[in-house]
Every structure is written in structure tokens, then in C-alpha cells.
Image (cartoon, rainbow, N blue to C red; front, side, top):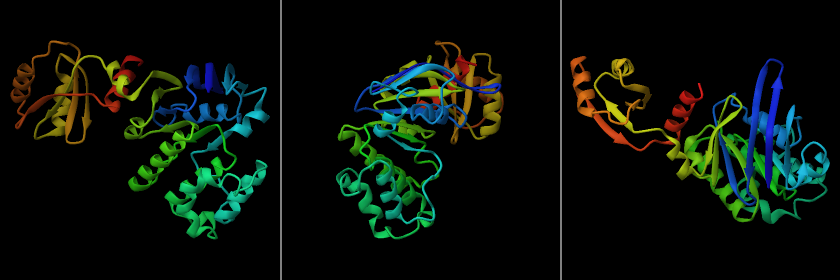
Length: 302
């Protein structure tokens, strides 16, 4: 559905995208995971023909995003990161407006948005600017879908939305995927990555790794430990001083610790920490999560 080859985008001295290549299968849910400034928004603007790449080529459903931009816009639905609907129009006025722009009607494609629209229909005469975050999000998704796109591009759609609305939103996305719509989504939330068919970890305009959520964790190097003691701040400092340390990051009440060797003896580490005055030392082997992999890959690409 989407084929990107060697995409580069610069803003003056800053390289937002650096020789990026990836493919998205038709009917799949593909997630870009990365922090602010990683290049996600620039990439999505190129995919939706809003800005031009400096180098490289992107095709969406066989269409070139530069040469065929008029046709492309008929088959792509885009939900930008910031709420970008008309705040001084009502819910139904926004929906009718977007349908008209694409030469269709709300009635014609109502089936596609029904599950989403039912939730905001009681507020259809309310101004869009006066909706809650979760309601704004559902209205924006309805407007992005009203012309029955084949590709839906969502730039951090759940940022700043409460946990219940986030979960509901992802349920809606999985429902749309089951109807054959290809979905490309960016998110800073690692738990959302697990719901994608494939994910790409992106940082500083480069893809660090791309795979299924299950397999991507196999990219983690070596063994990961959870280490606890009474004094988290001192623990972090002392672990980073330990000779065999590759990385040590605070993670809730404990530290996720990766040694630079595969034959770390946890007893030696425990003795070292007790020698540094730590009480209640607890060291356990754990399975890395996507956050751990991200930190590990950033160390590698530093």
C-alpha cells in the first residue's frame, strides 16, 4: 500500500528525515513509535502530499505522492496531531463540509463512520471548539473517514486524551482495519505499539528497527535486569559506576539494568551494591519492553 524509498527532508541545517525506507502492506496497521522531534510529522506530511521530500520517492497504492497528488488526496484520510477542524462550526457542519469537499455526503458513507459517530451524535449541534478531547478526536476521525479513504494517516491521535478514550479510539481503529482500511499511525505511547501489525522505531529521522511487536523485542542485546534498593537515586548512580554496565535507567520504582557482558554474576552485583551501603537489594532477570529496546537502540546509534 505504501512504499517509501530513501526519503530525506531538511529544514535548513536540520535533517528531519534521513534516508528513510519502509513498506506498509495493504489492510495492515503500521505504527511509527518515537519521541517528539523524531520526524514522524514530517514523514506523514510527505505521505499526504502536504510537503515535498528533498530526496527519495513515495508511492501510495501505486500513486506517486508528488506527481499524482490530486488523485492521492481522494484515497487518503489524514488526521493531524493538532485539532484542525473548524472550531466555530458545529459537529454536523464540520462533517458535512468535509464530505462536500470530497464530493460525497454523510449519508453515502454513514456505515463507515457509524460506530464512531453514534458517540458524538448527541452533541451534533455543539460547536467543535467546545467538545472534550475525546469527542474532538472522534469528530476528527469521522471527518478523515467520510470520503472512504483506502489509507488512513493518523499523527499522534491519542496525545493528551484520557486513558479510557485512548482505549476506545484503538478499538475503533481495529474495527476500521477489519473493514480493509490500511492505517498508518504515530504514537509516543509504547502500549499502543503492541496493537499494531508492524512497528518502526524512529529517532532523529532514522528508523532504528522495524518488525512485528512480538519480534522487535528480539533486537534487544543481551540480558536485562530489574534492580531495586531503598535509595533509587543512589542506586542509579552506583549502577552506572559499576564496571560491567552498558546502561541503567530509572523505570518506576526500580532501575532497568543492562550489563555489557553476557556472563554477569548477579551475586557479584549484589555484593557490590551492599558494599556501597544499599539495603533491600533485589535483582531479577526481566523481559525487555519496547521502551527498553528503544533506549538500547539509541545507545547503539549514538
